[in-house]
Image (tube, rainbow, N blue to C red; front, side):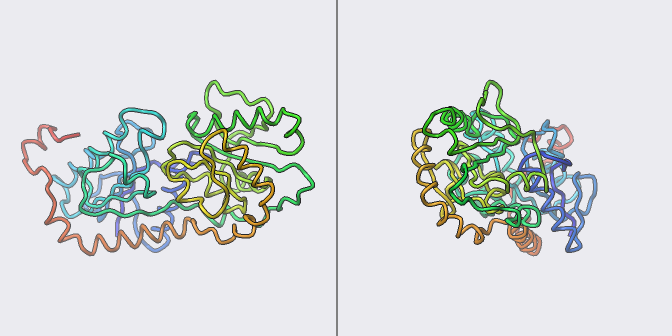
Length: 340
């Protein structure tokens, strides 16, 4: 099978989308499939759209490019659209519209969390799946993790590549202030790894520049509890990496986080609820630490979901292609009048 993934894979720390694309590429290649990142070849079996933005530096093609490929090069190629974004995530106003328009070209839509299905980000209701994100368990594991014994400060950590305030800046600022209060000083420590949003200053927090791979795993493992205050998170990778390193989770009850984190830590609704959740975690830590080895959101599991789906769709491509309702007017194609 030849698969086109619409993402320019980067080396080093580059966020969850990059980690996903790299894991999927490696899984496809490992079983003997071919992977390309452009639509320059005429014999592509399946196209995976990962970003609707044509000018995104990570995107290697968009929905318009895909539609032209289907109409002018190979109509038998199956198209899968992976929805991993939304306006609610960053307070933007155009992402949901772009996702919905791009979904016109898709034969099948994959959501990285059930929560995303309830948003106005898709239009082709013929076939959908939910495949949860997963991190590389060969890198992020609990072999270096040292559980908290209660006789030292509880070390919390979070890490974010995207420097947007909705990634949980309000919670991290509140925790930073708490660390200067007599009731908390010496009981809890906090590290922030990655890119801090503009205008956010953390005076009592240990800051670490963006890391990736084993260096990131070692840094996470040197802490006791993983914290994510992200608002309207489509899924993310950060909390998954923390969980696979063995850290119980403190997570905001927002977006997809409950679907990924429930049973492996404590949720909180807002800044006020965070303090109560932290106090409870310090009491119940050992209970959550015991269940962490059963956390299952690995890259291997995620990739197997995609590979099984791809095999199924390619096997049914004749039926899928026959049921399409794409624009087929040659004049529209020739004059670049497709709806993208």
